[in-house]
Amino acid sequence: MSSMMRLWAWVAVGLLASACGGGGGSGGTPSGGGWAVTTVKSGSSVRSISIALDSAGKPKVAFIDRGSNPYQVFYGSLVGGAWSVALVPGTVNADEEISLVLDAQDRPRLAYQCDNAGAAGGIRYAWNDGSAWHVEVVESTVVGGRNPSLSLALTSAGAPAISFYGGDNFGMKYATRSGAGAWSITSSNPARYAGFHGTSLAFDAADRPVVSFFDYDLQKLQLARLVGATWSYETVDATVGSGVWSTLALDAAGRPHLAYLAVDGTVKYATKGAAWTIETVGTGYLTSLALAPDGTPWVAYGVSASSWVKVTHRVAGVWSAAET
Image (tube, rainbow, N blue to C red; front, side, top):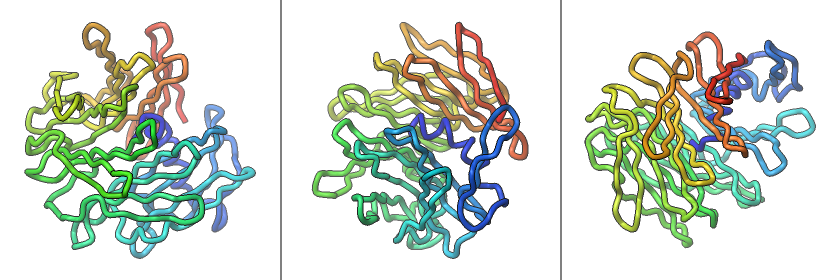
């Protein structure tokens, strides 16, 4: 997912998981800490979720509902204080992870993984042209055990690209789409388990892809950059076992900022100037990072599977947390 999507992903989990309300979405109600909580779709069993804000600051949500049979993708918009949610047609057998971005016209673009237990496995790309949804096969081959891990991003011209874990013995993959709609897949790191436990894709000002990923073979957090036809790699955190579920954002100067989970269960924030600096944000699991327009980093993370989500930002070198 992109940085903004992942920042709000944990907040949106609460929106979707609520069983209150009717068949559609409900209006906002106050929650602890001043948060407003709304029900997007009651009765859902959410496998994965992604959220993005349109040009007017209105939220859009895409999620895989395991309560449907078969599992399918749903897309929702907040309109006039209520959620409008609809099935994305053609998304049968969706099951692992989903990534949502909006293009320059605020139209949704989705990448998601399918159930890899059958012939319908692989990576899909769904997009809406303003009147109808279209679903494309990015990768159709079932390549064995797949850990949910993909990230969708758009170039400045709106061309989609996806980084994803290719499965056991296949490493991390990078997929791009031509103007004619053909998908090409290359290896962005052929190491056996590169990309296992999370990838995050962003484009720099020159539209060159930058990917953060956990290399399970090396047990380290890595950053990959594509210059020309060559990928280069550097280690962000050399601590063995640290770096799963990273989220990457690039600031206005092109400097990378990452949030990720360390081996000791702490949430880390790393950024690079002349060298990498790493700070502890809190203790939890899974992470999401976004940069404010002034460059302030915001991190969202789960405290436990059945407890709180925290959102924190860094001011003058201090992380200040607020619970949802």
